[in-house]
Each structure stands twice: as structure tokens, then as C-alpha cells.
Image 1: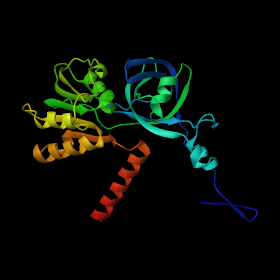
Image 2: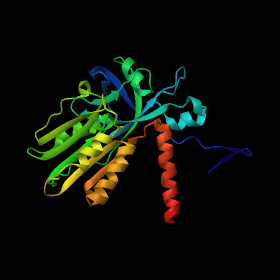
Image 3: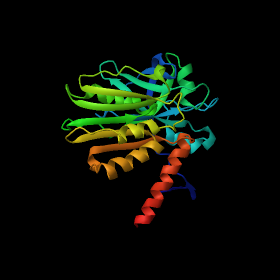
Image 4: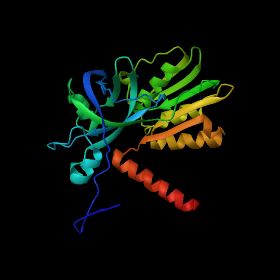
Length: 283
């Protein structure tokens, strides 16, 4: 819709897409390559899932944005190269009483956008975000739970373990670089955690997770499975769980958080293109 003003056509005001604000309270390096950042936020709203995620908006160096940050205004008034860089991160925890939002960042030196930001973060630093999204929480009626992932899925796996009911049986497989990257996972469930290490092996990323699940003797009863992380191994386990194990889709939560060799922008573009082709093929 356009407005006419004295015979000239003008664009309408940009639609408001106001982001939410988080302010750094403290940081902690919990493993050699994992940095925990605790934010304070009055804008976060828990959606009841254990894999809830936010879209973090990292500013471009030297660019001054409107405060509060409004992506509608930014995309209307700023060139695209000055738009904030968006990265998706799983929420490790949310404390309603203290309004503390905890997010864990993988850090490998100067690689990427979010890791270096977390390494330099100081109390008082602002970061804008959108969300949360999310769709998974452990099914309380399941006979047992299967949780599988790499470092990117570890926050969601840890959060799921913490909300399992007392005595709930779970088998957990997590792939990390080596033993120094293992974390203490706690809860009241009957949880068996297997850590798989990439260091010192010639296996491809995710091979250990695939082999562990394929070789697992499933306990009796209905399983609720969570398989998230690098898209390659997630796709292999998708086939195994749905075809070889014949699990109903409602009992499995699968998501490729990232793709080896691609940043998030490239991976999101690939997923969008795949979805487009699937829609065209089914039309």
C-alpha cells in the first residue's frame, strides 16, 4: 500500500521489527573451547521447551544503530552490508527469578562471529536478539529417552536432562573434541552419558555418534529421541531411526543446526533451496 502526497508516491513507514535486549552480567570459560555468557534480560519469555533458541544480532564494526534496535528501520535505512549479522544459539538456561539468560558459545580463536564476541564480552555489553523459538521438550510419557548431539546441541541436551522426571531413563551420546571438552550433566533422571572424542581418530565428524546409535540395543518401550547438531550426521541418523528402526516421526526431534564447511548464512540458504525444490517436486 502506498500513500499519495501532493501527487508523489512515497513508501510507507518500515514495519516495526524491534529486537529484544540482553546485557552481559558475567562470563565464564567452562571448557577450553566453551564460553558461558550470562545475560540479564527483561525481554525474554520462556516458551516451555528445552531446545529454545534465540537469533543473536551482532553489530557491524563502526556502525551506529537505532536504540532500541529495530530491524525494520535498519533494513529500510541502512545498506545491506551494514545490517547486523544474525546467528542462532540455543539457550542453556533461563532463570525467571533473576531474569538471567545463559548462552554457551563455542570458541575457536578468531574463527566466526559469535565466538570472538563472547571471548571479548564484558559486563554491561549489550546484545540484541529475536526469539525464542523451539519445539522440543522431553515427553513425560515416554518409556525412555535418546539424546544425541555435538557441541552445538550440548546446551539443549543438558537442559533436557535437567527437566527429566525423577527416575526417567535416558541414553545420551555427545561428541566433543576430547576429554577436556566434557561437561558435568546433572538431573534427577536415570541418565547414562557416553562421551565420544574426535581427537586422535581418523573418523569423520559425527561418525562416532552414528555408530553408537546404530549399535545401541534399544530398551523396550516407546522412545522419545532428540538428534541435533551437524547436518551430515543428523541426516544419516534420520534414515536409521525412521527406516531401520521404524520409529514414528512424532517420537523423534531432528535438526541440522549447522553444516560442515558452511557458515550459518550459507547453511540457511541451502536449507531454503532444498525446501523450495521439495515443494516444487510435490506440487
